[in-house]
Image 1 (cartoon, rainbow, N blue to C red):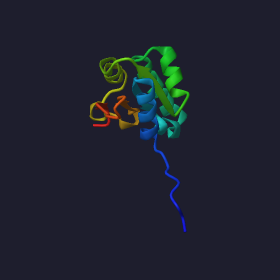
Image 2 (cartoon, one colour):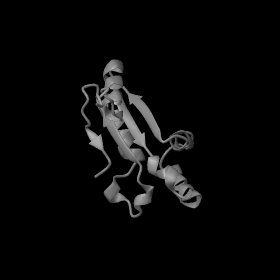
Image 3 (cartoon, rainbow, N blue to C red):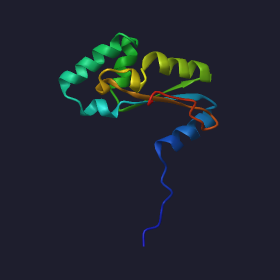
Length: 114
């Protein structure tokens, strides 16, 4: 008989962290980028180089998941909006990088996966 060991998902872990730190966490999930061809990856990097500071682009695209913590919801949401277009705004969905904000209360006030 298999007994559940109370697994945690990414959302739960981020929620716990946001609550413990009393911060707003911007979660950036670019897992799909890792499965693109090297040519497509370069196109995507060039696209985001025009939007995000070069040092941050390198940080974000060197990992599948990246987290930024902010003192306010406004700054977290504004950063997510500024850096990552909504899915429906992109002509090429290969350029989509999921970004969402988790509050200390565990709410998700913003996601670009719309």
